[in-house]
Image (cartoon, rainbow, N blue to C red; front, side, top):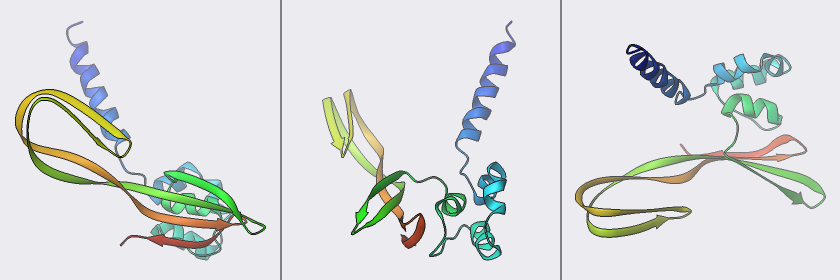
Length: 146
């Protein structure tokens, strides 16, 4: 019975590492091979490189860039429009001194703590990495930070 705890700990660590692994186009293709086979040869090459182009459908974009962080839909005139946003977070390191009760916020994130201390603090600031606009289920425009 004493030997079960190290085993459970190592399994938990392995699962944590696996869950943090970023998704790649190759991994997404392996999950959905039928969607990849339906693409044209030009689109297959783009997806393998993790790139998109005008005219690609939503499933091809999901294979190339993954599932979006958010989806917004609406109408542009008479056409149905959908926008996919891909977010990321950038770490910001600051040195702080605090004592007593501290309450801070950034956007929708709220946190508080009691105590005293001095040292570096890491805050992750979200930002939009890329956006794709679809009209009629096909890419009409896209943009991505370099």
